[in-house]
Length: 183
Ligand SMILES: C[S@@+](CC[C@H](N)C(=O)[O-])C[C@H]1O[C@@H](n2cnc3c(N)ncnc32)[C@H](O)[C@@H]1O
Image (cartoon, rainbow, N blue to C red; front, side):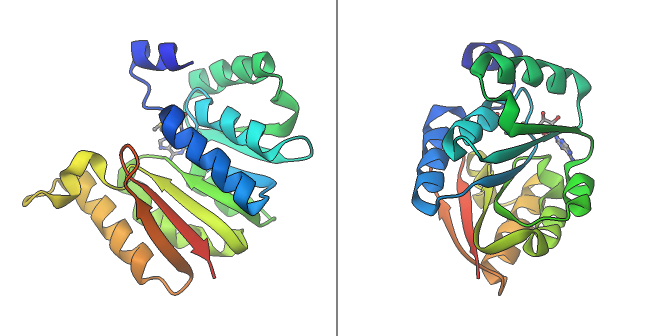
């Protein structure tokens, strides 16, 4: 999958961030993960392995071809039975969920990050983790004249730190991972 992602320029989290996610699951005992923006299912497989048997991971992506590739990878990885595949807008899909999750992982289009933040709190358990990738955006977040996408990430980061719902740390791993614990 890493080779395919490099070849086709699919922006996956990669093994260092994925191992960190696995550690977070081990630390918290998380069993349910809702992933927003799953592409070919690379990070989804790490979540699925981490939550183990009896765990459940929700895959979401707006691209049908990605979902089909991911479905085949889930079979090959032997974790298909613990993954629910949803195709469509991850924000809408999250809003339709009736349950609350142990972990919500946000990796969709960055311009939508502020909207994601508004949706997440009621769908996360107390003590649950809201995890977001690319919050340092290749250091563009410290540029003098940020573009619209960078502005959206900056707004997201500020609102996340200000939020009374979360305690947050940005881990400077790869492209920056925000880990926010729901109070
Ligand atoms: C950065 S990639 C995900 C990589 C994946 N999390 C991994 O690390 O293996 C982002 C994916 O989100 C999808 N996407 C972007 N905005 C979306 C949205 N609003 N709803 C659903 N999927 C979206 C894109 O199609 C793309 O495949």
